[in-house]
Length: 454
Image 1 (spheres, rainbow, N blue to C red):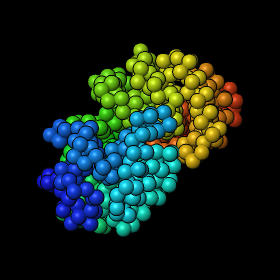
Image 2 (image 1 turned 180 degrees about the horizontal axis):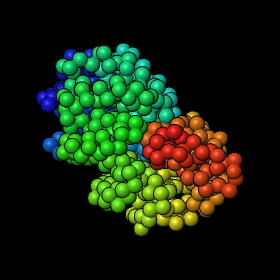
Image 3 (image 1 turned 90 degrees about the horizontal axis):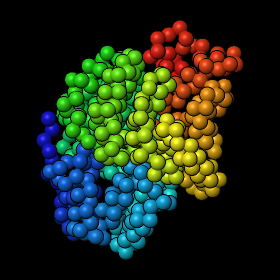
Image 4 (image 1 turned 180 degrees about the vertical axis):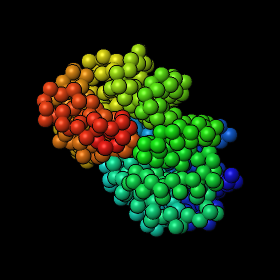
């Protein structure tokens, strides 16, 4: 088990080659505490949690530019709020920019502010370019590393997500705080680009140093999923559960992976038990977008398998409904749509589709709105057609965009729900040509079938 490093003050950050433009040691330590919890996917009660740390950070130095950058960046990277609809967030980002102009910041800090500002405008690619500029000169800047990693994920830039970490990995020596977590971050990019053996090796190295590293657990869960190693995956999750179950920002998602194995085994009631015991309670407690998409994706997969989920969609809709006009991530939008369709709420469904159409017609520099016309809207319409019992139309909508869906982001495992939608539709088509789309999977077992089709 890795020893917990002391929180870094002004001098410690300077010694690390990452000076912070504040004279407040308390602000520096709270910045470190916030960053540490973000990396570990865990709100540490002994530190006051992320929100508690950010509140104290603002009080310690209200003009601390990097305090503003991490605070706004975390809200934005959570993808539950946008400057377009959230006036408080819009003001906070503008304040961050103004504060940065009144101080002699380092070039690294200015790039951080500019990157968060670009992300707020929906220009994720530009934000990544700016974070990469930081990493060229400061490869141990964990905030730039994590923000860019998450943004690449949202863009579906799998190779960039991997290579961004590969470039800086040699600089992370064991004496640097949080260094073992870089192994887990790197392992995820390797896994998403099909380097399963190397990914597993790195993730296990990270876990040998810190068994509570929930992100490295998550990488291994993905590897078992992608290799159709259902038995091994279930055993791994069961044996490691005590180490990651208290990682409040990621435990729900790890339980989702656990439930996927059960769905693939046809053990639907066991999967629903995990949903009711872990996933839904987490969704209700947090309202976090990761918990939202986990809930929607799991119920939708069960729905496609013909499993009755009862009134569970109503619980999800109570969280997703208020986000129908957000259009921050197309990936999120499609999952919100699953909830409104599952709960049979045509008004919310129409609101989401209409406002997404509007966003696509005036996209500006917002990468998600730019992608909505050609990928996001056809994908949404395919879900609607599936619900309306028009499998041939589902296939007509999905086939042209099948290999572009990666652009809405998410992992290969998460996006597999759209492969499954295409397969289910093809199997039920009246058209013989459309039925042939599913032909490669028919002789196979379910898990192998999905792998062949995807």
